[in-house]
Image (cartoon, rainbow, N blue to C red):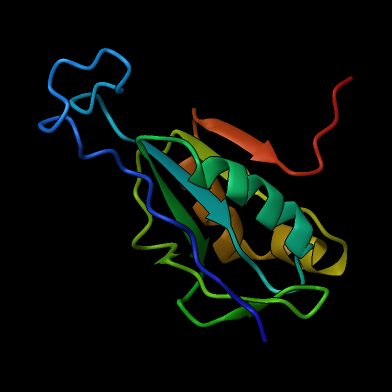
Length: 134
């Protein structure tokens, strides 16, 4: 069993490097990125983007599910959520949804998941992993 945990990437070094123009302004709003985790999702659709999002300086990354119970992907990889639908921040910069087949169809028909997506995704940047440029 492999457990995936996000890295925290908040910058807190400004006082040490006070005059450094290359550091981001830590007084600005911290980007809040939520990534939906649900049973039977495609792990690669979550892990690749999670790695990129986790490297963003000044961003907080949340792996969000209905509960904090471990979630198993379609390939058997187990992922431990870091936030629930209720504890996820409301003011998100990005709401990301991984793809898949059977698990994705089930999540897309689940009223609790849909209510969370509608609540947190309203007016925000939403990004399904399977989106394609037209």
